[in-house]
Image (cartoon, rainbow, N blue to C red; front, side, top):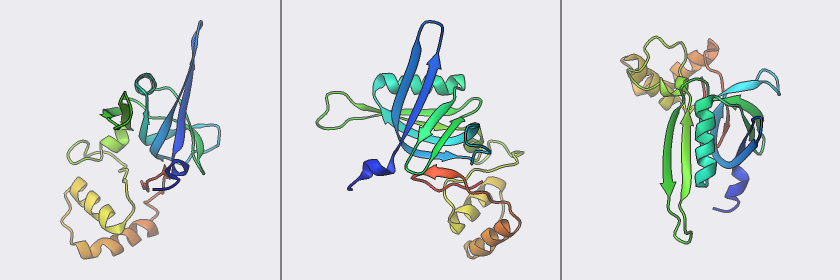
Length: 179
């Protein structure tokens, strides 16, 4: 895969205390966020997949727990955002054959995205979807709300959601999300 680095972004956060300034940047593999109302305002991040060293990923994880604001740069994306309260965090290590130390990987999910799984919050007013294909949208909403559906209804179902303006496309890097 040539030029994969061109499809990635960068996630940065800066924290200033009385004595020190912490400035951490990691490589961003995937991002799913709401469109910001204004360019400098913080927006809601729903999916962040990043990788880097031990200390950088540890700092990003701590910043997510604290609700700090991240700055995100991508090929066509520049925004500021937070994951909100109680983000769900998955960490892993990737062992690369010619490296001494493993690469650390973290996936950060907002509470709104995490609650789209079956049985988590039946009273939620929003569902964040990681793909915008008609079959996926129908399947996820049918599973989430226990609706009996047929696969051939997918195109009609998505057309109705769009006609009623119930789907909003989200900003993303390497993924397509809708709300």
